[in-house]
Amino acid sequence: MRLPVVPTIVIAELFGGSLWFAANAAADDLVRVWGIGTADIGRLTNAVQLGFIVGTLGFALTGLADRFAASRIFAVCAVLGALANAAFALLANGMDSALALRFAVGLSLAGVYPLGMKLVVSWVPERAGDALAQLVGMLTLGTALPHGIKLAGGQWPWQAVLLAASVLALIAAAMIFALGDGPHLKRRHDAPPLRLGRVLMAFRIPAFRASALAYFGHQWELYAMWTLVPLLVAGTTLNALAPVSALAFAIIGVGALGCIGGGLVSRRTGSAPVAAAALATSALCCAVFPLMADAAAAPLLALMLLWGASVVADSPHFSALSARACPPEIVGSALALQNALGFAVTMVSIGWGTAVVEAWGAQVAWLLLPGPLLGLLALRPLLKTAPPH
Image (cartoon, rainbow, N blue to C red; front, side, top):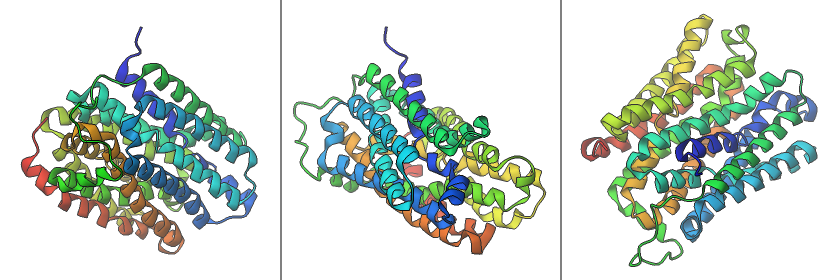
């Protein structure tokens, strides 16, 4: 009996995504045990981002994402990521080894996130926007999951939180290996050969270019916001409500609901209007947060939950729009390339944000504001021309 397709992929993405911010959930312990600072936590996050960029560029420019079965690439990379993450927990003893192992985790995630998106399109292309919204929602929840594991584990040592994430990634690999690839996105007999770098031609397609540029603006904000959430929470009235790990889990994890809700709306409106609404909402939250940082806990928490829900709700729709714009034989490579360039953008905002947050405090949110505003500007052509489905 075949596994249920979309639930299998999105749950595997949830489990595999737990590797991404596993080290961030242990940030307090690492600062104490290794004697590192806030900027070093940003360096660890950026090591994952850099590994992901190198991996996705490799998949995109060589065409490997379209040469081999996406399910096999996903499974192998999830296993490798689980091993690298476990090695970080058990073997790393300082920043040098830690950076190398987090880089390896990011390299492995290059075969998990974009290949998971390709798997969705290969199985259910007719409802890619909604299904990708579920997938990115689960990736978002996976990003928050280590904070939840830490909270549930109580007094667990920080290594146990990371090892739990590795176990989940191994389960994800088994699920996707058992599922296999869908019947769509098979190469046509008359399709051009997958020459090195051919995917770069995707930027000649106006719809792909608009979607990709909007995605890059979105990425300036997204991962920096996720990285900064525990630091922003700790510096406000929110830290009196609940442990920082609980609040970080809620604020990041609520993005899953934003993605799923946006996916349901996209069935009626199409992906471009949903992406635009999410960009506008998260831009408003960026602008308002520094003005409310000293407010009472209840309205401040409501604002941060709205920000957490909107900041990622647009992400799956950029993938759906880009996949729709590309020839089917390069969809995997095009999505990998878009991810690679988008994550290169995140390295700048994460590095800058974590370097200045102690001095700027809540005003660091204004550093993120240009991202969604430029994303809205880039998306305008698709709001005029994109079909509703």
